[in-house]
Image (cartoon, rainbow, N blue to C red; front, side, top):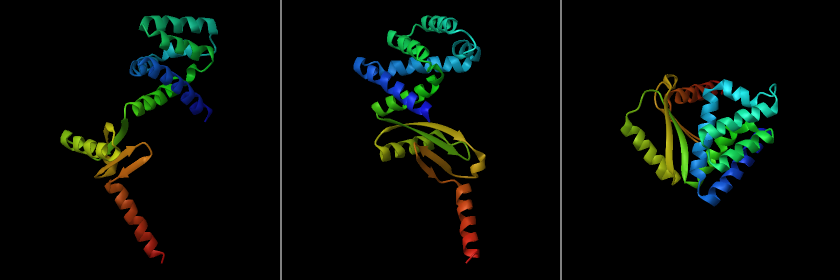
Length: 183
């Protein structure tokens, strides 16, 4: 739970700077690029984050990476601050919160659409438009397929779940039948 508070605090701090200098989106891209690089290069992540190596050597590796990526002064300072404060392991969580905060700032909401079969683009566009109309925000949607749904689709927007799957309907029917048998 403490990691969530730490991530939120640092993400808000970077967003505050980004709003002041108008670079919130570019900071998101830079931060996302660093997170992606570290996810792809696990050895590099270990060289920076593993406490078995001495801090000075790990910081040199981080400085080298920051220089090679040609990050902005703010992002470079931010990453070095995270390292110095012993918070570098929260980088991915910080990025996740930062992404949510910048989306809110830009009036964007993210949604997940899971369907039983692959949907045509027209259907996806129709669903996106309906969600956009309901939320009053631009909807960015991740679409995936889960044959276990049997039919229909499940959409998640934050904490809201719109479940129109056949699997859920069958489970509800089963529960209803079981309740009626117990009467």
